[in-house]
Amino acid sequence: MRATLAMTAALLSSAAAAAPKPRDFQSSASAQANTRAALERIRSLNPRVNAVLAADPTAMDQARALDRSRTRGPLFGMPILIKDNIESVGPLPTTAGSLALLHNVTNRDAPLVARLRGAGAVIVGKTNLSEWANIRSNSSISGWSAVGGQTRNPHALNRNPCGSSSGSGAAVAAGMVPAAIGTETDGSITCPAAINGIVGFKPTVGLVSRSRIVPISHSQDTAGPMTRTVRDAALVLSAIAGADPSDPATAEADRHRGDFAAGLDPNALRGRRIGVMRFASGFGTDAAFEEALRTLAAQGATLVEIKEFKGRGEIGQNEHIVLLTELKADLDAYLATTPPTVRTRTLADVIAFNAANAATELALFDQGTFEEAQAMKGLDDPDYRKARETSYRLAGPEGIDRLLKENNVVALVGPTMPPAWPIDAVNGDQIAGGGAGGLAAVAGYPHLTVPMGTVKGLPVGLSFIGAKWSDQQILSLGYAYEQASRKRVEPRFLPSIEESPEIAPHLKPAPRRAP
Image 1 (cartoon, rainbow, N blue to C red):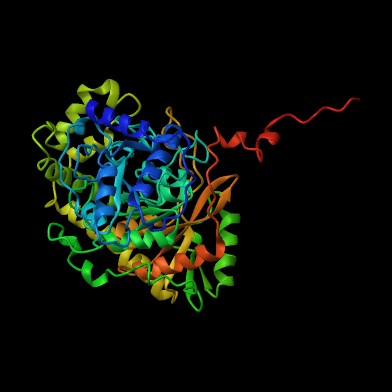
Image 2 (cartoon, rainbow, N blue to C red; image 1 turned 60 degrees about the vertical axis):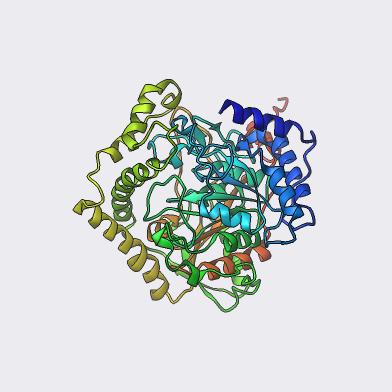
C-alpha cells in the first residue's frame, strides 16, 4: 500500500496546481487531455473532501492507448472513478475501506469495469466509501473508512456525504470527474447522489453484473452510475449493462439493455400519470418537493396523490434478516477468491482482524452488525427464506407493483432523502427520515434521483421509482424533469452551512438600539 500511495502522490503532483472548472462530459479528440484535466481536478479538490482513495497510476497509459486506437466508443475519453469495493486491473487494491483488505490486489477487472474500458472510458482511480459498504455497524458514520478516513460533503464540509458510495458522490459533485460508479444494497447510490446534489441511478437488480464486487446481498446488490446529468447516467448505464455468465441474476439483462441515452425524451412526462408518494415525504423537503410537483405538472404529467402505504416496518424487519444472512454467505464466498496475500478468508476472520486492530478499525464505532451476521444460520435456514419471500413480496408485487396498478400510474415520485446531517463522531449518523427508496431496494426495481433544489443551501433530490425492468422509462421521466427544472447547484466548499451568507447573519445577535 505504501508503494501505491507513493505512485499516487507522484502522479498527482505532476498535475498543474490550478484545476480546470468541471464540465459535463463531452467526447473529445483527446482522451489524454480529458484524463490529465481530471487528474488535475482530483489533485486540487480532493484535499477538501477526501473522496478519492488513490489515483490509478495507469490512467495516462490508458488514455494514450485510447488515442492511438482507431475506435471511438460511446464513452471515449470519459474519466471515471470507481468505488473501492469494485475490482480493477492494476496495482490498486480493492479494500472496501477495510485495513483487512489492504493487500487485495486481484489484478482483474470486474465485468462492469471491463465494459467501461471497452466503451472508451478511462479508470482514473478508486473512491472512498463507508467501510464494508456501511454494513459493519448500526452506529457508523457514513463516509468513513479505516483506509480512507472521512469523506466530506462539498457543499458544506462539516456535513455528511451519505454512504456507502460517499466518495463517488462527493467526487462527482465536487467536479473531479463527470461520472463515478457506486454500488447499492439499500440507498447507497441514491442517498449520496441526492445529498451531494447529483444524479444517481440504481438499476433493476440483474441489469448490471455484480461479479468481482465485494458483496453484501445477492438479493439486493447492484452497481450503478453517479453523474452530473441524467444523460451521462444513461450513457454509462448503456456501457455497463448486460449479461454475465458468472452472475445468474443477469440472465435477462441482454433483453432489457439498449442505448439508454438515445431513448431519453424531454417530453416523456407529457400525458403520463405519476404517483406522488405522500407517505414517504416530509423531513424538511416539502417546499422543494411542491416546486418539483409543479414542474412535473407543467410538463404535462397528471399527478395522483398516494397518501398511505402500510407495511414498511414489516419490510424492514424482514430485510434485516435477509441482509445479515446473505452477508455472511456472500462475503465468505468472495473472500475465498482473493489472493493469498489476503489473510482474512471469512467474515469470522474479518471480525477477529477488527478486534485485533481495534485501535484503528474500532476506534469510532463497533462491528455489531458483523457479529449479528456471523450468528446467522445460512441460506437454507427456513427463517431466512421466509424473510426474503416476505420482504420481496411486500416491497415488489404488493408494494410498488400494487401502487402502480391501483393508481394507474407509470412511476412514483418523492423526495429521496433529507438534506445532509452533520458529521457526528459521538452519535454516528443522525438521519431525520428518508423517502421510499427502500421499496425499490428490497424489490430490486429501478430508482433514479435527480437534483430538485436545496434546503437552506443543502441539496435534496427527487426520486423516480418504477416497475422491474422499467429502467429506460424511469431515466426518461427523470431526464424530462431535469431539463425543465435545472436544479443542480455547484458546491461552495463552505466550512459549514452556518457560515453561508444566507444563514450566518441570522445567527448573530440583533444590533441593540440605544434607549
